[in-house]
Amino acid sequence: MSKPTKQQQAEAYWLASSTRNDLVCPVRTTLNVLGGKWKLLILSYLLDEPRRYGELRRLMPEITEKMLIQQLREMETDGLVARTVHQTVPPRVDYSLTAQGQRVRPMFAELLGWGLQYLDRSAAAEAPAGAGQG
Image (cartoon, rainbow, N blue to C red):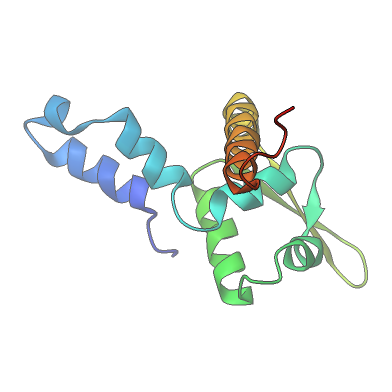
C-alpha cells in the first residue's frame, strides 16, 4: 500500500476533527496537492500531450529518478495524473492529465503571464541607466 499524500492526510485529519470548518482551507488544499519543487513543472509538461517517463526525465535533468517517480505517484493518487501501461515489448508507460488535472490549465495561463511580466520587469531593472531614453 502506498503512503498517503499530504492532501489525503489533511482530509483524514479534517474528517476526524470536530472543528472541521475551521481547518478546511482551499489555499492549504492547493498547496498540499500542487506544492513542492517539481509538481507544477511536471504538470506544465503534461498540459499539451501525454509524456513517457523518459521524456519527462529528459525535460527535467535536475530531478532525480526517485523524486520524479514519487511526484508522479502522488499526483496519480491525488487524481491529477493518469498512468497508462501499454502492453508492448518493451513495456511503455505514458503519463497524462486526468480531467481534474486539466483544470489547472487556467492557473498555468496566469502563472505564465506573471512569469513573463516578472522577467520583463527584471530585464528593465537591469538595463543600463539612460538606456532607451531619447
